Image (tube, rainbow, N blue to C red; front, side, top):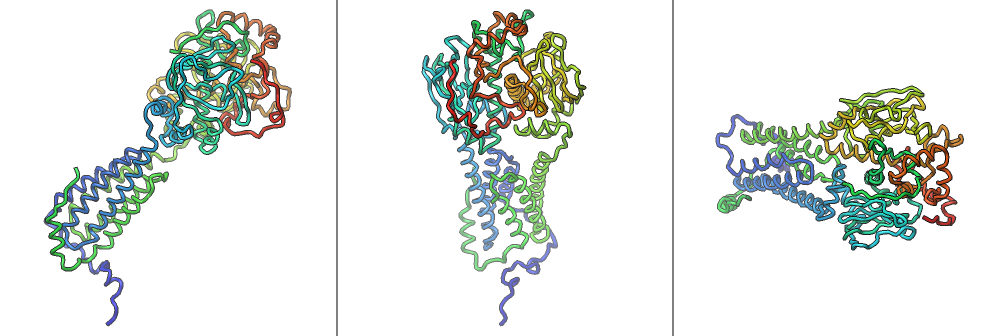
Amino acid sequence: MDPPTFAESSNLSLSDHPGCSEWQEAPEGAVFHLAHILLVLGFMGGSGFYGLLYMFIFLALGFLCCCLHAWTEPCAPDASAWPCALSVLCVAQALHVAHRARSVAFGGELQELYTRLFRRLGVSLTHYGEIVACCEGQIHTMEKEHFFAIEGKTPIDKLSVLLSGRVRVSVNGEFLHYIHPFQFLDSPEWDSLRPSEEGVFQVTLRADSRCRYVTWRRKKLYLLFAQHRYIARIFALLVRNDIADKLFSLNTAALDGRGFRYDLRLPSFCHGPQAERTGVVPPPRPSRNRKAMASNITTCQEWEKAHHLLFHLGNLSLLVGLLIPTTVGLHMILLRLLLMTGCCLFITWATLYRCALDVLVWNAVFLLVNFMHFFFLLYKRRPIKIDRELRSVYKRMFEPLHVREALFQRLTGQFCTIQTLKKGQVYAAEDKTSVDERLSILLKGKMKVSYRGHFLHNIYTNAFIDSPEFRSTQMNRGEKFQVTITAEENCKFLCWSRERLTYFLESDSFLNEVFRYLIGKDITNKLYSLNDPTLSDKAVKKMERQPSLCSQLSMMQMRNSMASTSDTDDVLNQILRGSGGSSLQKNPIGKTSTTMKPIEEAMEDDVFESDLPTASQLSPTPREEV
């Protein structure tokens, strides 16, 4: 006798499964419909942590009900084996997602830190988990009147954020400002040093009340930055915005005769004499039918034929889709695609061989739900065409902060224009141009900022032109520019109407936070460029450097030397007459630091990249007195 062929032994050939001549009259049971209701609810889940957890739990319950329903069909092991396997797989995925969510869930002060500082910038819980792991999740306590740092003694070897309490900052016994919760304790010190450099605090930080803070060790944080470029950019943004906030808090009391704040870039705030300082406080699971199960066991005399090949291919497609790890970037797109493939196979099987109208209808519903999710995911990932002139700004400033192309297009496509200035034309004239009109980003060329004819610094591409005015002034108060901004080359810039931009940002909290931190970082970069006015200018590197009103200071020295309003105008006049140089030489805080270098504005995003130590850095240098 000839051995049976593979088709005869497997019972999967098409000839063993005749096509449908008419639909089944009797509908499926209640457990079948309950299972498919649960599956529909599961397919509606999203792609976030809680969306995945919701989806896998409902899918597990739905496949479990399918497994129970399969027992009513006697002697069909494949009908019950597939849903059981799928249910177990969904439970495993749900446990994996729950473990991931639990591993990045934080309680108490760390959760508050995430909410107040990181979540507003769109930092995911996964990235925040890396940040917390770097500090080992430890929160330190500092009792009242205890010192966090002493000027001239405490080394700069960490970065810290205050979680509760208040810290007083002073230099030479004179009050500078307060540090409040969710502000960095030592951002000026951190940003004034390169990774390969060392230094000590030039201010004293003392607790005004019982304080709690979190701290990151310098070396461990730099290792984290090397592994996660996105985290490095987020910290650069947070640190420099915090520096700008501290400088503005010192500038609160500095008002001119009209009651307006002085521009931070004016020379009195770079190396004014040590005047008296004034502190300002800133404001049901289904049950099994045992009788039916017993009937299945006792009445089964021989196994039925296996279901059609389309049935098994449909279940295999679901199985492969559910096996995709949730950590894969395209996980949801691939999952929805395989779920749709499985539904199509089930629809074909139900139409041609099962002859069950309710099976056909339910799988059609599954296909529709998954197709809507699949289409939405593809729509979110659709390529957005950004204007060629704006592509550099997006890549440089917004894309590193995970601002999507569609959101950037909304920002730039409705109420902003691209304008040009010819060489020598004035963008803003001091005491004439209103600050209420616009906010601009330089796209091409170079601009010069001056005060009463004296050079302050340059503005290069991909930098805000008037960020200090946008941050420190209010609309509709009649305030004017305190500096003159002139095009040194043919320039092109992106210009927003300030009023319309403000209203638009109020409608999008994420973009509002991104703008706030970008502007704060840009202000700090401009203050750094006061230290070296020709920084990043390749065209003049070989030429004699243009003198600036501000000497080369670190951010710590700039903060420490900010004066009060008592003699602001006198200081400005003295500096402009040329007597500021002698007073600067007498002031030890105005000395050029040999170890602390300004951050290059064009290289602002590479601030956390380590530099190789030079010969001058390796040789010991005498420490300056503060």
